Length: 435
Image (cartoon, helix red, strand yellow):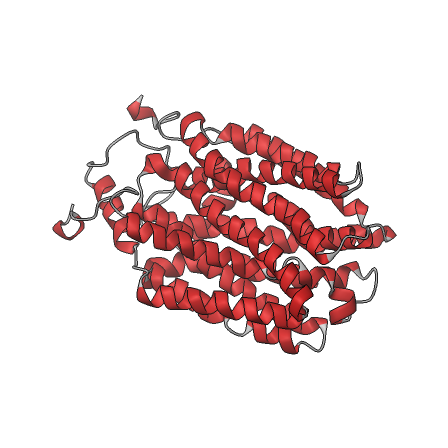
């Protein structure tokens, strides 16, 4: 191993200060998307001119977000291996600066769609980098806990932002409330990135050097063997998408689980608003989903470091789908909140562990690219899911059909993981030579 890499130590304890900075960054990333998830969909008709029951038009902003964020995830992973993680993070925050002003001055829904395109750029670059950077800094046996903590922080930020913006929209008006909140979050994140966030690419290179010299400690993961040491973008993309059955199972599950989040983002506020809930109450119901998802990941990521990734992923897909179906089987704030909590818990089981599973069997030399491509497929699910939801709801003008579509999709996708997937944790299922 080159002498230049010998002083890089891996583990949360050794890198706690920088780890904490990255954790707060993803909290702010979550708050940035959270400001768009309560007020904007609920008031699409009254504030931004979306005609009643125009489900396809209503979903356009999430379709745009999904395709843009998915593509930028792909770009971010590859770009970060060339220019570094910190620069990509900073570019992501720069992209977010116009968003609050576009909402303030939006004369039509088209402006909201355009603002959401920038949000997709922001989220694709920033969330990818906070996750990748923390994986660079930590040990393989901490991976589930690290991703769980990352997603915990991000989705708690998302949930809190949804609740706060619901109240701020009531107090200051929807446009000015989002302006004040958005400027404060984006300015703080940009400043912290410039002053305190370090680039972590050297830690990833140091880990790769240890593997190359045989000095890596612990069980060897089941890395794919049908890929070169320094693969091209196409090699990694094809491996993640179909050449490795395990990676393909994880990628499709990531895509389908975003159908749930697209549903929560677009149709939950409309569904609840039509049932007479106030913006503040809608914020709380959707906030329960986000808080349960976020807080539970603090435990479910760590759990998978002990029991493995496969079982939490499969059961998470099925529990999440059941929670979506429950929304239609009762009425009232309490029922909808419980249903949202069950959905959020299912997401907490599957979400960090899909990423952890990809990280388990992606070699450090191309892990950034693998994570980016997995996140490409996963967040493409926003776009594909929102488009499918709009079509399903428009066929007969009944929004409830979209809920059933998502519930069935989650059941089938979980079945694919059960059949195609395998345990990826290197301690529980190491490479053959370590057995």
